[in-house]
Length: 438
Ligand SMILES: *Cc1c(COP(=O)(O)O)cnc(C)c1O
Ligand code: SF4
Image (cartoon, rainbow, N blue to C red; front, side, top):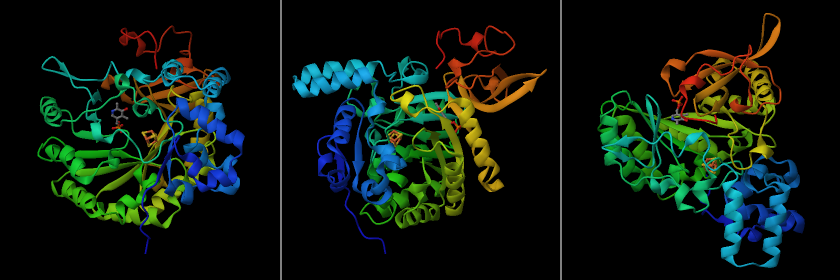
């Protein structure tokens, strides 16, 4: 029997009440949390604190790094500015100005999220929807724009810091359904956030049900971190049965429910309640697929990925994507160079069953598309870096291999030079409206 646990959430306002913070964290470390947490989102809960973090080794603990703000996440100069502002007790208005300026320099909307992928229907922009790849639309329901805890590396951080301009959400499904019907190539709706599984089941149902009556839709996907941050949701909460019923109803309508679980580290898969949650979700007929970025301080070792994929398969989950950190937020603190990410992927991939090799990566979700790093290769005796499109803004690019000059330092597509003294990559000529590739 899993005991019923009520959720207790901690943010900058009350984190000092966490018993482990009092017991293990020095005043200095608590100051790091306060300063960095003023700029970047910070939220954690009792499950993460009590079940997932090994407090005796918190300095190296991946889940501690995943959820608690770290000093290195801000540039030293920004850290000093915020620290000073907090010490001087300036007005909230002044503090806001300083903080917003720092945030604006942290590239809050990478890969053209705001401008490029928002569809237009009847002359109106469908805010809260993105349609970048033929078959799949992303849908950001406005009630799902929070999470049970926040990841320190999150590229969606603008959604959580309360700046309306850069928030991205939608309350109303009908127009989205109308848009889908006008685009018969769309087969997938990916409901995302934030975390849509922070919603009550009746709200979530209201968003999902209209799609169940649309024949062309084959897959409802839900992108969520809830399995890792609050598995009780699927085990013993008052709303649990209604959530599982909704999942069964998706399946009954003849569609697949793909539960896209974000899992960053095998530690998240270690608790009895997680195991039960997975069993309950799978019993509804849903599939669980997994994805994660590769992040320094959290999961930048091949053993971690091997263990994680092995454990996922053991639990009945399907490994799906390994991503490279996007260019936003505290990227410098977490980023792993492309070649190093490829090495880690390779060593992990070689040591898991073929059943776990459904995973694709390492992948940059960049402006032109999802670009996989295929690895170093020799052409006419010269070392180059091979890449390929897994998804493309232009579908003609998918499965196209292309080459960059070998570069061990490069961390993103726009750090790479086209190989063979070409001026541009083949796809760049088509992206004339964009000066900078994200
Ligand atoms: C990753 C992504 C998808 C889904 O791509 P799949 O390869 O089908 O998993 C859809 N839309 C956007 C904008 C994405 O970044
Ligand atoms: S769960 Fe996803 S959206 Fe939420 S904070 Fe973590 S990375 Fe960001």
